Length: 59
Image (cartoon, rainbow, N blue to C red; front, side, top):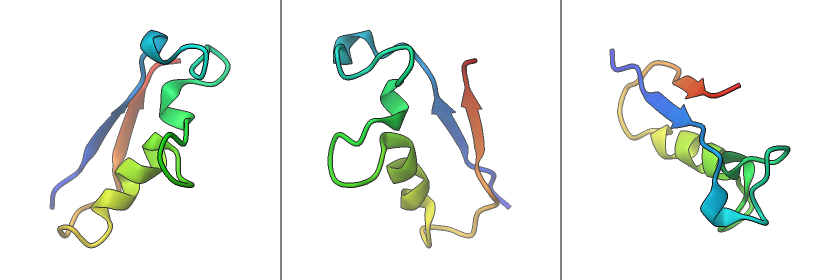
């Protein structure tokens, strides 16, 4: 079984002032109603038989 690893971190300084320490870029909904993190997880839905994703993030 494939275990997807989603990297979800970083300061997002190029997206300032939208991305801030209290509201990081992975939680922004830049296109549509879902955040970048949600869009990434949704791309896995039905694509392949995969296990639950492992999300790696900063503090």
